[in-house]
Amino acid sequence: MSPGARKLAVLVLLGCLLLLLNRVGLHLQRQNNLPWFVGTVLAQGLAYLTGVRLVLTGRKAPGVLLAVLLFAALLRISILFAPPYLSDDIYRYVWDGRVQAAGINPYRFVPDSPELEALQDDRIYPRINRSDYAPTIYPPVAQAIFLGATRVSESITWMKTVMVGFEALAVWMLVRLLVSFKLPAERVLIYAWNPLTVWEFAGSGHIDAAAIAFLVLALWARRRNLPALTGITLAGATLAKFYPAVIFPALYRRWDWKMPAGFAGTVVLGYLPYAKVGLRVLGFLPGYIEEEGLKSGERFYVWTLLQKAWPVSWFDGVWYVALLALVLLAVAAWLTVSKQRGEGDFLVHATVLAALCSVLFSPHYPWYFAWLLPLLVFVPYLPMLYVTVAGFILYESRLQETPESLFRDNTLLYLPFVVLMAAEWLRKRRQSPSLTAVNIAHRAEDPNAR
Image (tube, rainbow, N blue to C red; front, side, top):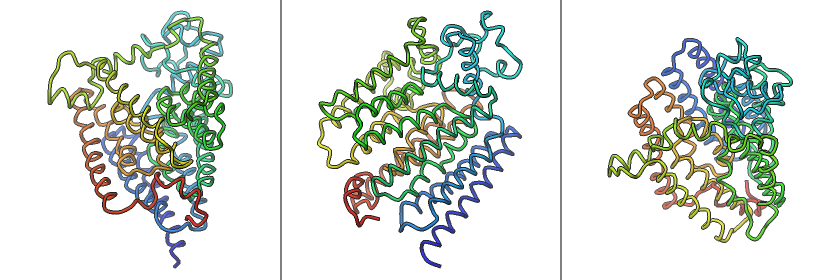
């Protein structure tokens, strides 16, 4: 058997294993057995990382891309029709679409309000989280998607299908980007086979899938040297889920005004239809900051470590966020003024900012790591790939929901991450990386690159 055929055969076996574990995961969901479900997904992660290694090493092989795309589709279809298990956010999506269709600003009322009584049913409304005190938190592009999707159907399955549709767009554009950089298109497996994207998008239907699609469009526009479109699409990602704004400095070209203008104009136009409620257009965001421990600092793993090592009463979450903002601004400024050696360096810079933000802010929910994956397709940094897989450990703290359980699970997640970072640093000191982001641009310029 040729090396290419052997590579394809192994990937097919891995794809079948992932599908089998999907079935096991669905069975454990029906049994409401969260610990064993998490263990099953972590087992999927091992199979996934094996697949990642295969597509990052060796030569291109006929049929591999087709197999990657086929199994990516099957993995999602196999759980698309199951009820959401890990999150109930999708019920709020349907509710917000319904409220807008009735001509009501979704930022104006909480779902339990008497003004919305006519919209309350026994299928969607009872499952909305925080329904008695929280208006919607989702920004304008997310709201437009909710409205458009629910005008076709208000079913949960349809909303999940829409999110998988955004994933399909992201995968298609990732393949185009890979080809433009003369990188193997099969590397799209890094996004498409990750258990995080499968369970959180096809399983729970998170709006992050739409943010990722707009983010990939922004990367494509930046690659094509279309600054206005880069700003517009990055703003689209930001208005679907706020965090993609972090990579703005990485996509910005010095002295360019079109990209910032496109970004700012899109943000203003996005909020304009909802602006009559004033500052309430931020929705539940201020309350979320308080509820999730961002204000106190309990949400942040690094803050907790600092407080355990050197307790300081005044150093709360607000000071920590301010410090992180300064760190991110300093890194962004350095990346902006540093000379880019090639056309692929913006991907490296974007990955640095996104990864730094994600680790230092230590999100409580695993799906907040998913937006790293389109960048990791081009910058396959093992420690961050580990985080996207092992993030499911955070679901274990749901069983107790205490600061101690969250600290324990964060330690289980980030301690191996630090060890992997050290190992990766040592490896790169001993040998040159064979297929990492630093040589994306050089590979794009080298017609003999494989």
